[in-house]
Length: 337
Image (cartoon, rainbow, N blue to C red):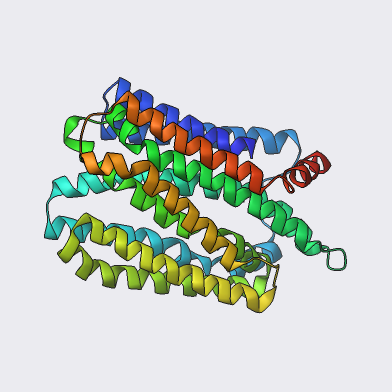
């Protein structure tokens, strides 16, 4: 978790340095990716070597098994990127390159929300697999409790990005890109819809027989995304792309939940996920209503204080909702140490 989050903050810091301060533009984004990924690779080799966890060799049996497991996942990884690329093509065809730039910048900020979910899930997944391996001593209540705590943690990050996207873009981008902040909360909401996906997809990754079905969810939802984007972008421009993403994400989550329940039922509640999403959405609306009413008005201290107040209220409610599980979560972490 420390490594994943350190990589995340390093990449954000380098983006701010090269884009906002040094004004390198698109080259700054590419440079930050090169540096952060290089640091991550060097650290990985150093850490694995330090603990004697790898050697350079080829094990044909393991290679055959790994390919059998991973090849069906390739369409799963490619389909999402292809759908995002096609959406940008449709936006350019129906509006202009300016709209593509605005949408691209908003997507970068919005995707930070998904990066947080993915980074935390990389740390959560090994512990989750370990729990599933305890057939007779499997404690599903402990899994659900920790998962619920993570959902609230994601909510705090999502709400923070949504509320302060206007200020972040005002700090990092030129005046021509200021209006892109209005898309960020909508994109963050789409990734909030995706939250249950991460918990259920771990079940499919755990069972080898289930992994080959993962591409069904991503490929079908990506095809739906492309189909809807063609019509929605014509009607609503950039906002149509976000609407297509939301509907496609609901389909993806639905298929993954259905498949995961076929192999193992942990005890996750879709109703609870849904209520949390609606509450998060309500806080976004309350916090952003003045900003949307004012449109592209300049950033004000009063608006920032108001948003901070909304975020603090959300954090207090999150702590209250998890008062029974925080102790259990800390106990899990101490046990892992």
